[in-house]
Amino acid sequence: MSAKGTARARLILLEGLCAVFLVVCALSVRIDRAVPAFGGQRMRGTELLRTPSLLDIVFSRPGTAKILLRASFPLIGYMEGARRDMPAPGALSELMSYFMGFTARYSRDLAFASLSGFLAGSQSLSGEINPQDLDKEWGVKEVLYSLPPGEDVVPVAVTLNTGPMVAIYHTHASESFLPELRKKNAAEAFSEDPSISVVQAGEMLARELQQRYRIPCLHSDSMHDIDTRIGAYYRSEATVKAILQKYPECRVLIDVHRDSQPRNITAVTVRGRSYARLMIVIGTDNPKWVQNHEFARAIIAKLEEGYPGVSRGIFYESAVYNQKYSPMAILVECGGVGNTLAECQNSVQALAWAIASAILPAAPPRP
Image 1 (cartoon, rainbow, N blue to C red):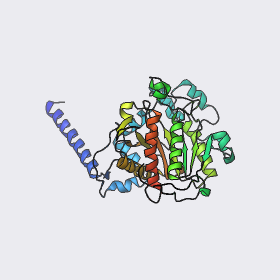
Image 2: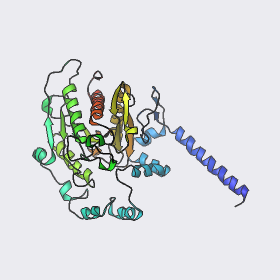
Image 3: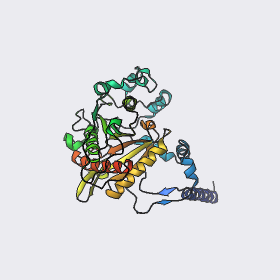
Image 4: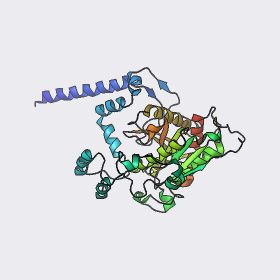
């Protein structure tokens, strides 16, 4: 190709990129603080901006927006696949995974795949579960407080005889924190001891919601990843279904995790206190994802209002994460491998206030 032809090709490419940029700007729906948190940075600004847009229509149809975005920007699909605690599989594994329907990262995963109950459609995982076995089989603990409202506390708009309003559980219950384990390697940030794992963060959240805001809670400490992380979401789905079968009035589902990001991304100091930063993950492969997203945005907005910098925003992935079972279902990443449980407790206090503000008739005062 001649030099003139090369220059013309570059000009056409530049014009195309400019056109794409202008289209993206023209289709912008809103600017707010509930944004994907790839780098852990939050947006600045105090005003929310919303403009009429075609994306208002597109995003109201579950799945359509995701398909269009992934087709237009392949990097989104790459980022979804890259955000994993384990190393990316090789080309051969990716090819095999395409035909098997799941990503096999180790040879043992192939063996597990042949076992009844591994895949989502298997009878042992999709069958009926006796709700009476929740305590024995699934590690569910009911702790419903009936204390009278204290000073500066707004009572919840439900009665205790309706059962729990919030269910907290852990798909990856063994996720822990290096300072609590006295270890240095991020790959070792796991423990079967619930007192030093993310289960303790869930217990803190349940206690905060119950004692401070009188919101009836249920906390499951079941270890869905005790043997392998592969298939953990299928096992936690069984727990969620069992909980909702016994307590169909339960409205809020919170899957509490620990992120794999380092401390320089997941720690922040606000008003002299150290916090483990919080990120909400929304799975876009479920029919309720738009409602899940709106609920997450309400929580993020309150966090930014009361605890600027604690939120890392919302991360979107092509997944379900059991969020199809409620319009108020979210996955929360509480800190990362380098945080402490003391920092998690500070963050859980902030998160409980944000959740209470989103679901109570009137927002309670910030603790």
